[in-house]
Image (cartoon, rainbow, N blue to C red):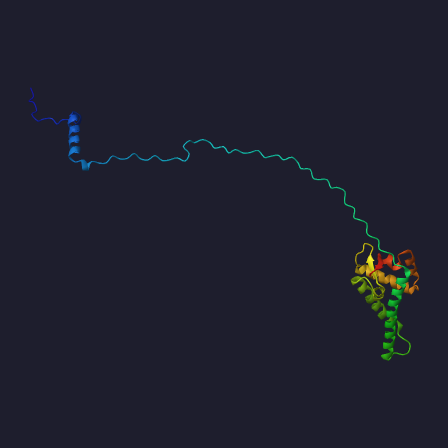
Amino acid sequence: MKPRDTQLEEPALFDLPLHDAHEAGEAESKRSPAKRRPAEAPAPQALSLFPEETPIVAAVKPPEVKAPVESPRPGPRPVPPPATPLPRIGLAPRLVAGLADFAVHLAVALLLVAGSRALGVDRTPPWPPIAICLLLFSFVYFVVPLAFWGNTPGMAWRGLQARSRGGDPLSFGQASRRWLGAVATALLAGLPALGALRGRSFTDLVSGSALRRDR
């Protein structure tokens, strides 16, 4: 027989009495309550902006279908009122105004002849230069007053004024055509002016204008 080992065997970990360790721990906690380790607070749970992951579907309104708007039909155009006819001017006032303007042209022609003789020209007057100067003077004499004031100096003396058929002032084109009619009337010895007996003279027809009383 083998001799029995007299050395005591160490107790195993699981062989220790559990109730003794538990009682020792409670006694230790009672002796030093200040040294107890504070219990850890539960970790805060993270807040979620979307607690429930649900699909978000945007409500899309169907486009509104508008009924077509009918454009208003253009009505009949308003008829402008008829222009007030200008009173007719007889032949006598036209003739007196024309003779007054002719007298001014005759005086200018005599001045041109006298000026040519004063410059040493022989007794025969140089008619072509005098005619050109007289024509230029006549154009300025007629067209400028007619376009700005509607009458020549002779017409203003007799209280006459030239206007378009609608009563508007004359344009430069109408004033120029009226001057051409006056020149043609003078060259034809005043015969085209006889049309004034019917209400409109030759100058009125050419320029599309008419005479009226200024006052």
